[in-house]
Image 1 (spheres, rainbow, N blue to C red):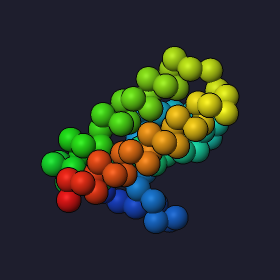
Image 2: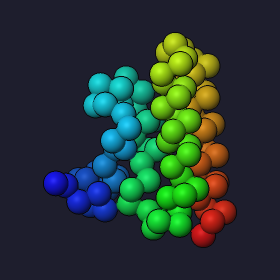
Image 3: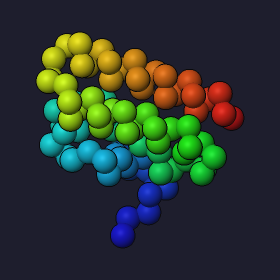
Length: 85
């Protein structure tokens, strides 16, 4: 089993398990919704954003507006995690 805290060669933590490789290839931004590398208290702030990204991917057709929604959701996730530091 791969260590969830290990970074990849690119320096980015592994993509979240909530998304398939095909989904990440289609919407690369999904890769940044990872949270397993974070301390548990920060995971509590980050994980709901991953779940909401999953909800958007499942319930919204791929279009420019979905991409905007995912980008803004990622910005909100980053701010929520920073706020908990």
